[in-house]
Length: 135
Image 1 (tube, rainbow, N blue to C red):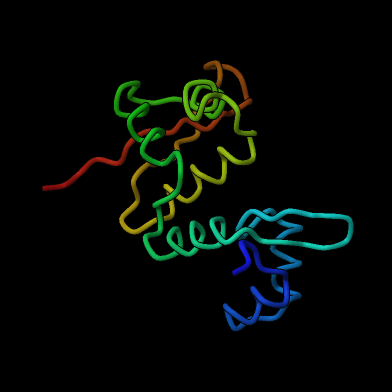
Image 2: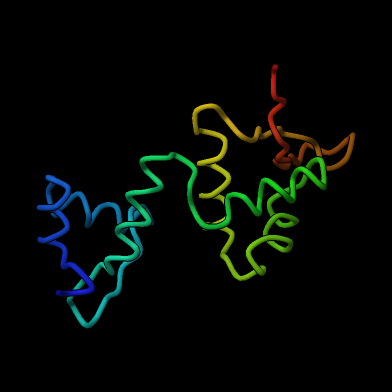
């Protein structure tokens, strides 16, 4: 049995067009893939991880680590979260994707707030914090 699927096989598995997978790759969505020359391969482990993420809406590697860090820190910006979580090895885009998913899941796990860097400065930054749990 193969340990990866090509673009056509994955599109058939998910009943979608291969063009959708191509668009997802260009926008950094979907499961991780390998590009070997002109061939695209999706490892089965990455496909199954992605399917689990979609089912649970937040069950992705690093979610719990980010939530634990925010619980301890109270609030943090993107660079602080990137430095403290996931070994500091994920790109800003990957961390932003994790944070986006945590703010958009049902129910939301974290909230994003815009704050000025300095009181008189027009420059803003996004600060993330845990959503309060209403009992």
